[in-house]
Image (tube, rainbow, N blue to C red; front, side):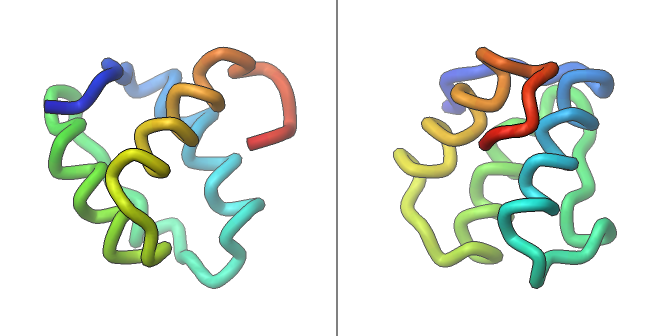
Length: 71
């Protein structure tokens, strides 16, 4: 189970950060529905070729500074 919870508003900010960091991703690659955090983590693991711990850490880091530009 994912160690974070996203709302559509917070996901929008995190999504923008992922698109900046991983320029090979398309907006369509980063779809999310509330309550589907586990599915999102698996999707991101496949897209950026990283493990679950890294993806969850990156999302939590982005949520900690949602208004900042850094991921």
